[in-house]
Length: 408
Image (cartoon, rainbow, N blue to C red; front, side):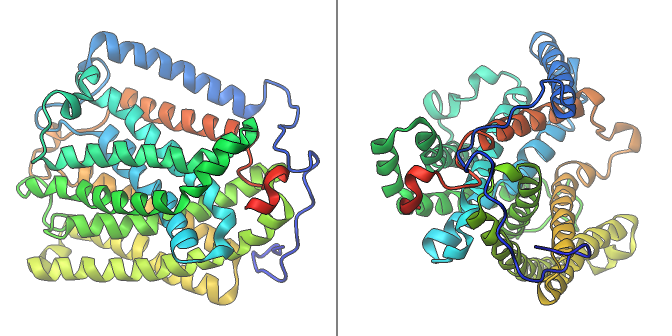
């Protein structure tokens, strides 16, 4: 295991969970700090939900004709989809590229991806003016020439794929062996389909902003926006796998069996190395974007300094730190860098959708999210955390089900 300084010596297998790795949740009191805080946030979210669906968007948001997309799109959608990319990156690495040493990360990554995309759809119910018409583009008036139609179709299909990829875990929990074995046989085709869909909609989220050259600041606007979004989603997904895995192995340690604990180190170092390379590539194509647009002179402006902070502090620096962490075998440094990378993706998506959008408007007319909009976003994230906790403490996510040990 790691030392106090975060430097790895020789990995040792974690002790077998007291429940034998069955996934049975340990008995705890109801009034735990997590339950109390989550319960209060959910109560607040229920009140805000009532206000939203009885009073309309104007009752809780600062959205307007100038800014129809706010924090629910910038954070809940754009950031949520990027951070949920660990599902397709991990599944592709293990099942398509044969990196079996990362097997332990597949189910947690797919679960995170599934919950992430489910929460994106959940958040859209608040953002769309008439949420009951959310399926209209598919069943009433398909807008097949719209990039938003492509995004919606791919997200809906990929959410279905993630559900099917995740299904073996609850099927093992329920003891439905025959159906579980059938779903396992679909792993490879589902993984391929998921990678194709992810490539399409991750890039299309960037393509949506190609229609805003007069609104989005030139340092963030580029014809390469689809490429930027896709490449950065790969880095975001792998960083999220490291970050989520670190928290899961700490908080849900009783659920982790020795095999998964030992493989966890391989996941961290392997994904850290890959993330470093992807971030280097991302930094390079961002520089190319500035060069092609010939926007070098804007780097000395106020927005230019903000752009440099994003690129140097949350792209170049993590790429370097990941490399140092892998070379020196420093787990603590890698885990910190994963968090830094996740924050960098959040910053980038908020820059594109909110902070650097409508930059020409006077400050008084600029969009600032209301506390109720932020409160609903916190509520949605909390629902995801509660769902993740419920599933991990009951189903074989961080351990192999003993009944299917030889089948994994």
